[in-house]
Length: 112
Length: 111
Image 1 (cartoon, one colour):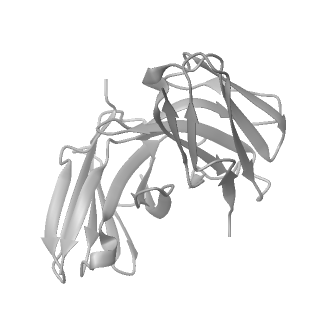
Image 2 (cartoon, each protein chain N blue to C red; image 1 turned 90 degrees about the horizontal axis):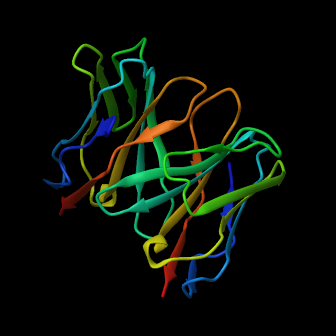
Image 3 (spheres, rainbow over the protein chains, first blue to last red; image 1 turned 120 degrees about the horizontal axis):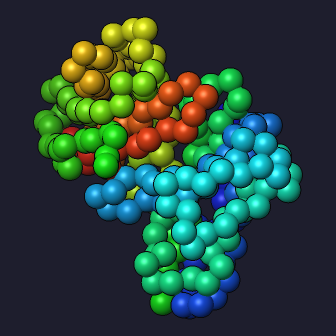
């Protein structure tokens, strides 16, 4: 079974803090993704990566950056957290030869 | 502009009956379609997919139908069970490219 893990299930941070969200997959997948989920808006793609050290902007990259130093790990960074970044953050991975993505359990981030 | 739309925010169905969840898309280049199911406080789990060369794919109680001319797909769950109560997301994309997700439909199956 594909396993995607995220470092925290719940996180509370203050405005202006730097926030790191970690994602690890154990299936040697080439592609990794970060989404945020908000009510009525579905899943919106923040960034994705199709190889180590490679990254591509998704639909809503503003205020975020990412890092992929190893194939199994994809980190999302909020440089200076703001209240409008309060959301559910979901990480996903997929193998290179199929578009089916496998998701982690999500991190519920609250920025006060 | 939303490329993938799920126009029903919620759906309520009696246990044992059919649940039909709908999804419309605008990009004619999409050639791969998926449905995901999400329980509260969990990540979405892959349910079923269909490629544009097919018009139907079945997996147990779940069937996905694709109408390319109408740019419409639907998920049928027969018979519906209380454990099917969840948020269902449809997603679409071109092979080798990122997926675009709909806003989701909350399904409630009443016993």
